[in-house]
Structures are given as structure tokens and as C-alpha cells.
Image 1: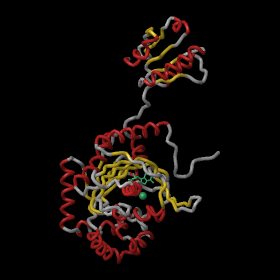
Image 2 (image 1 turned 90 degrees about the vertical axis):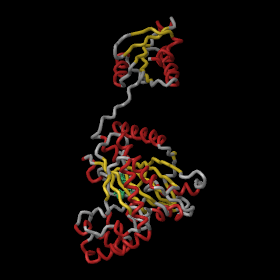
Image 3 (image 1 turned 180 degrees about the vertical axis):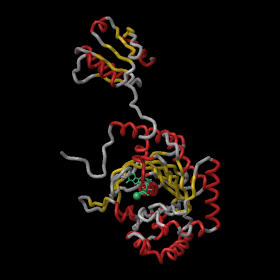
Image 4 (image 1 turned 60 degrees about the horizontal axis):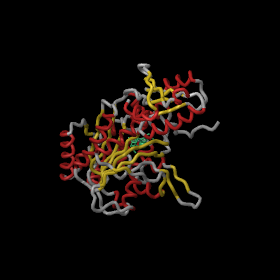
Length: 417
Ligand code: ATP
Ligand code: MG
């Protein structure tokens, strides 16, 4: 038997219902907030991710699926969504008059990670990006959008962890101070952090191994190394969050794993126990230099990405997601009735009624059972006697009441029911 690759999974049964519900909410709420849908390729040139996510990031050093196609092109399965969106924004010249562009994506991402609860090799991210505005209102809009969407999905104890990485200069100043502080403790850090000390010391703050050590808990705060402009910007973000009643907690050690962030970074965290170590359901931040770095015009941006598998996991503890009941089930016995069943099903479906009928030669008795299994509200009982007189019997599957309806009026009758 051939089995699925490690770290991948099939979305079936309960999970399929949950995923459908989440996707419906995403499409619905993105429209309310005026985000346009964008789909970009699942693989892109290898360079795109190396240049955006960062050579020294965990994703690029350990997690990408890199491969060559039959013409020796160097390609990578996308590990995240922002790089592709920004590439597309530039390539399709979306910059220009209609700024800001508000986009959302929803698709599979690939990272060669150690699989576990809420951590897969193929996983799904939904994300939003606002390209072309540096207004703090956009920082607050993406944060509150994520927060309110998860609330609508049933999450109760949500918290936003937020930090300000400041400008590039702010970060350079902080890096000096951070390295000075860490230097005497370097041997107490994990092997990865020893390397990060030289390549990207800020990433040490994001280390999953050392994060609870006293050394990291007592690092100097990045918020003490920022320009006045940067500090007042962050104050304003927090002020706006207060206006919108969003629960947040400033965490000066929050840095995020991708290299392109500056100014506001945040995570939306759920306290649902089932999530364990994977309690961050969405994460994002501002990336004001990325568009320019990839060859586009200077365009300040902000966005977040949300792991749908984690939302699905958490939904186990939230309300039940039930399969939607079928409006109608059509029952028949002979060939003449079967033809009527097929045509009636088509007409009803085109009129917006959900319908099904048997295609396995079941007895009438098990067709009734099948209708119940699908929670059908109305049963259409076809029989040749009725059809001869131009009638169709409809049975209310809840009250068990039967009505004979004129064949020519059946669609209107069912729709009105
Ligand atoms: P983590 O710290 O959990 O490894 P990350 O910093 O790598 O997360 P991002 O790259 O910011 O995560 O991705 C945004 C969101 O995507 C995460 O908050 C999480 O919900 C989800 N996510 C990331 N990696 C995975 C994965 N391997 N499987 C499932 N969901 C994931
Ligand atoms: Mg990760």
C-alpha cells in the first residue's frame, strides 16, 4: 500500500467540514474588509525565497523544498505566501494609482520541519497584505481583522503579542547592544544560536530551544534602542488598538522568523489547550523595504499569515461543525422514475436546492435510510402511478406529512418550502 508522505495529511470528514467553514468565513470577511483574492504559483524561483525570507532564516537554511526541473531551473516549493504576492505585485505592476492594494491568499505551503501537533510539512496558510500604505491605521486594520475573524470562528481567549522592530538603523543599534550583552554567555546558547550570533543575532530571541533561559529573558529591550519617530509610531499603534478594544501584550522579545520585517510585528495567540506548543495561529508584521528589494518602487506594506491547520485543531474544542442537511432526497424504483429523478435533480439544483438520489440500485427501504443519513428535509417519492396523472408526492421528512403536487409546479413548490 502506498501511504502519504511524512508530514502531509488528507483533509477528510470532520476536518473537511471544518476547513470548508473556515474558507467560507475567510472569503466572506475578506469581502467586508475589501481585500481582493490573489493566487500565485506553488513553486517559484529559488532566488525569490532566498532573497526575501533571508539566507540565515530557519526556513531557508533548513526547511525549503528545493528542486531542479527537467530544464535545470532552480525552483522552490513556496514556504510562505508574502514573497510570491510581492513578486506578483511588482511583475504585474499593481503599484500606481490604486494604492493601497489590499490582497488575500489562501493555499498550501511547504516546509521540511519536524512534524507534530499543528506542525506539518504541507500546510495551509491564509494571509492578507496591504501594499502601499505606512499609515498606522493599516497596522491596526490587519491585526484587528485577524482578531475579529478568529473570534467569529469561535475562539474566546485570544491575545495579540506585539512588538516594534523599528527602522533598519534602530535595529543596527540594538544588534550592537544585544551582541555585547550575549557575548559572555555565548557558550550557554544552543548550536544554532552560536551561528546566529554572527549571522543574525536578532533571531536568537526567536530561538525555540533557548527561549525560556534566564539569558534570553534578561536581554536588553529593543524598545529602548529606537528613534523618537519609531517610538511615537508604535505608541500610536497601541493607542489605535485600544480604540478597537483589542487585547494585546507588548513583548519586546518578539522578532519573527523571517528577515523582511520592520516596525510593527505581532502574533495572534490562542490559549486553547489542544494547540500546546503551536498556540500562535497567525503572525505578521510590517515590511517596508521588501518591494524595493525585489526591484519594485518603494512601497510600505503590512500583512499576516495564519496557519489553517492550527485553526482546525483549535476548532475541536470549539462548537461542532455539522454537515449541512440536504434539502431534498429523491426516491425511485423503475427506469421511468429514474429518468424523472435525474432530470428533477438537475432542475432543482439549478434552482438552488440541494438534492441527491441513489445511484447504487438500493431498495426503496434503504433509500429512505440514505435520505435520513443525509438529514434530508423533504423526500420526493416518485412513482409511475402519480406520474401518469402528472403528479409528484412530496413528503416532509420531519412531520411525515405527504402532499401531491402538480408536476409542472414541483420546482416552485420545493423552492417555496
Ligand atoms: P512557528 O514559530 O510556529 O514555527 P513561524 O514563525 O515559522 O511559526 P510563520 O512563518 O510566521 O510561522 O507562519 C505564520 C503561521 O503559519 C504560523 O503562526 C502558524 O500558524 C503557521 N505555520 C507555520 N509553519 C507551520 C507548519 N509547519 N505547519 C502548520 N502551520 C504552520
Ligand atoms: Mg517555523
